[in-house]
Image (cartoon, rainbow, N blue to C red; front, top):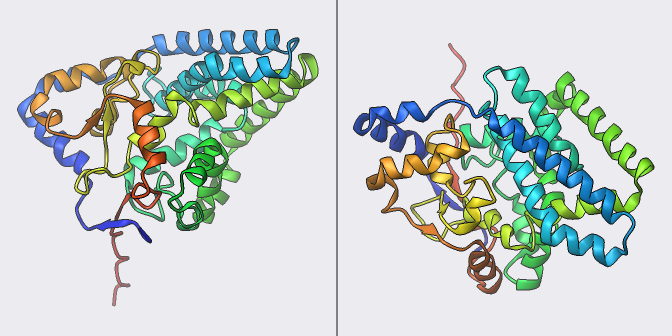
Length: 321
């Protein structure tokens, strides 16, 4: 393909959520927070920092092997908890979620938790709108990668760096975030944390954490999530769920349709949404293997970065006469 799949259809999640609420009004009991996620953040942070300290005294092969085998799962868990914080699903007050998100983001090193949260909420509010949804690949990115398996593999491998380039499409929002005190404080905390680890523990510890990030959303069994959530395999469906076994270590992040329908439901209750409304979710295309999906994406020439649904954006109102 040479361009995205365009549609003037509305975001399906609001419509489906309204239908489920009419049929199952008790779905509201699943809304809320999960303070246990803060405990999970602290445990994952402790494990990741402990492993980084331990591997700093080993060879470089051990740094990358441990990052692939263990660190990727810990880092991915922190990313999911950061996502929970973006939706205020950890603690009742916004400030508690902000601080928990900052904590969760420290071992991730390269991702500013609060800036990412702003872009992620934009993805929910404007799904598929090219100028507002930075989950949609950039056109230059899709053209550069094309159809070849090696190029797509390189794109998956470098996904964290690629994702950092997309906000450049919206320079005004980028400028606003650059002046946001919480984003700046988050950046300061990241710099202090990264420099402290590098000075006190060593460069291998920092390399382990960065490698864990790249593996957690890259060429790894977890990397299929990058393709699973919104890449088209059915032209009329632009969000997909994953119901495979890795949800057990990925805190149910595979339940993506359920999450988009009800972003006020914390991770531990998402399977209950599917059980409550099987008539809404069973007919949808879903996946059972992230690894299989990633290999399929790499192997098939017809699956490229243009396989995303882009919605027609609302036109600006004419000025009053």
